[in-house]
Length: 83
Image 1 (cartoon, rainbow, N blue to C red):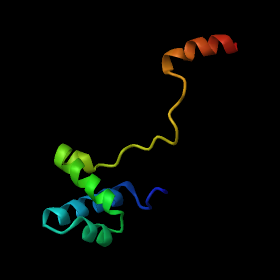
Image 2 (cartoon, rainbow, N blue to C red):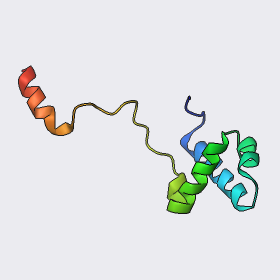
Image 3 (cartoon, rainbow, N blue to C red):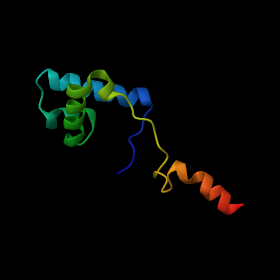
Image 4 (cartoon, rainbow, N blue to C red):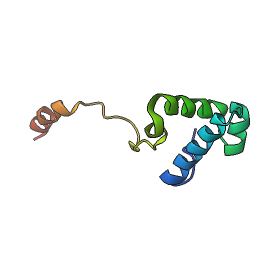
């Protein structure tokens, strides 16, 4: 699945709007259709908001792909072997 388009602020605003609509009593499917997401996203955002408050809706930092396979503590050994 591709990353949704929009700035960090726009994406956060969409999450906040979805949660606001859910709190007003609208159903998950209805909210998902209004904000243009899968119903599972709306449910996840609602749970995040209930557990973490506003911080649960904040954009996570982008990691630019996969996590490194080599732990940072092994870098000196690798550098030593490569030189």
